[in-house]
Each structure stands twice: as structure tokens, then as C-alpha cells.
Image (cartoon, rainbow, N blue to C red; front, side, top):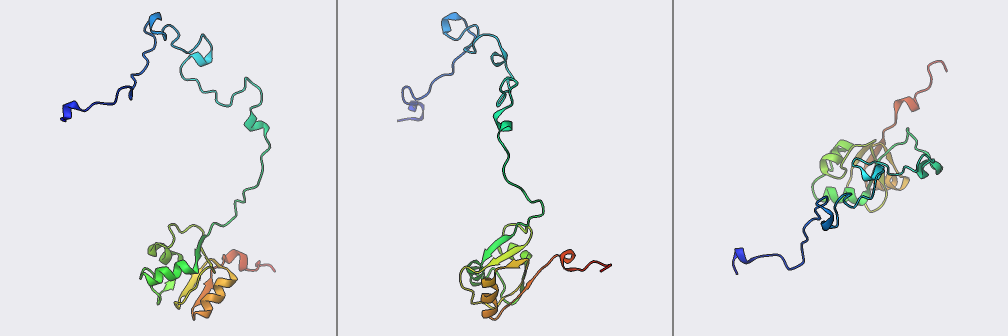
Length: 163
């Protein structure tokens, strides 16, 4: 066997249909597009168009509500944090913030902060400064000898000036 002997199996590849090459080809004249009309021409873009009738995607009711003020946290479990400490990616003596978690590869983006969830066990003594945490996570962190400080938005906690 030589390189010049290699070829495809018989019938595995098919040459394209050459349209518009006479009546004998079977695809002459209109080239299989039918006769006249918008779809017989090039550049047709009528997906969802129903001839002037209100399209289905506009007839159906819209559902749900998107809150523009919602928060999108990185959710991190205690077990994931312990893995990062054991692997040496997270320093147990340093303050654990969202920037430290991104640098350690625990989170990929900063988003609106991080929320610690209480799934798994934490044995390392860590000091956290995060946006939110579940009650079980707070008790587990404090039980391991660590501390947690929850960040809050200043506008929410401050009282109005004229009050």
C-alpha cells in the first residue's frame, strides 16, 4: 500500500448537484426552487412571518419577571474551601475575600460577591469577608475557630439624614 493507492470507499462521497445546467440535468431552469415568489429568490428572511397575521411568538403571553436589582452570588461550599486549603491554593492565615477565592481558582468571576454555603466540613481556621453566608456555614466557620464578616451595602444600613 502506498499513499497514491489511498482512496475513499465507493459511494462514500457524493459530488454536489450542479444546478441551472439545462433541462437534461434534472435541475435546470428554476434549479429546484419552484416558480416565482419571494422564496424562489435569494436573500429570503421570513422565519416566523405569517403573511401579515400576528406571529406565534407575539401571540403567546409573556411570563415571569426579571428583577434588575437581584444579586448574583458565587456559591461556594465549605468542602470546596477545605479542598483549596488542603491543596495549598488558599492561605489559612490570610483574610479570605472574593479576590482571594478568584486567585485560588475557587471562583471564576467576582460577580456580586460570594455566598458561603454549609455543605461539607471545614477544619481550617479561616477568617472570611464575604457578601453572604448561610446560618449553617456561619456556625461551622465559628465552630472551627474562624470568623466571618458579612459585607453590606452602605445605602441599605444608613438611616436617612432628616430622620
